[in-house]
Amino acid sequence: KQEVTQIPAALSVPEGENLVLNCSFTDSAIYNLQWFRQDPGKGLTSLLLIQSSQREQTSGRLNASLDKSSGRSTLYIAASQPGDSATYLCAVHSNSGYALNFGKGTSLLVTP
Amino acid sequence: GAGVSQTPSNKVTEKGKYVELRCDPISGHTALYWYRQSLGQGPEFLIYFQGTGAADDSGLPNDRFFAVRPEGSVSTLKIQRTERGDSAVYLCASRRDRDTEAFFGQGTRLTVV
Image (cartoon, rainbow over all chains, first blue to last red; front, side, top):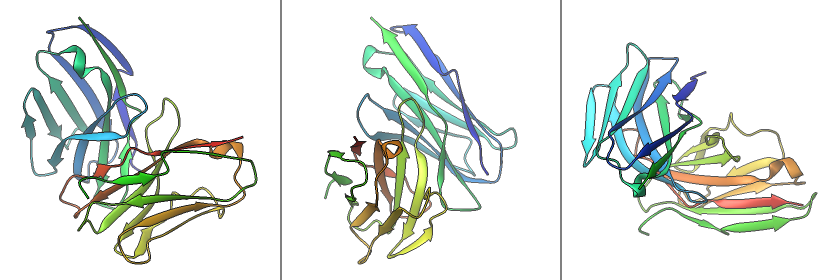
């Protein structure tokens, strides 16, 4: 079974800092990987989808990288803003099976 | 519709009662997922539909849980004889196919008292 781990569990940074969120997975045979953000009491908002054949994807201030062989993905957030405060979740879609396997998330607080 | 819609947004029920949770996926999305999320945890997979059929129901915790998608669009998650431990946020997601993004609804918060 695919196990997904996200480190750190929580992070607090001052506004303007660049930051990196980490996601690791145990089975490198993945189909794709998706990053989401979740605001308190809300559903999940898709940020980036990165296919197994890709090394990175970018959307605005966000950049996701993927290293399948080492079982890792990172989400880089440039010039953080208070509005970036949320929980960030990584979900892995393995080659075997249909489920998206989630980590527990990283809770990010960006202080003004 | 524009996004995945889930109803109701909140449901409070008494222990032992039956509940139904509804999910309207994005039009044209053949893949549909149900997840359950407890406080401070990531979403936990329950069931996956491809069209009308449940391709993977390995995440359903026991036989009190059942889901249907009779016409390949709207899906209903059914929970019989609810228990307090069933209290959680139930999330639905849809995607066009494996190569595209999954989109989630806002969830149904189920509270069993």
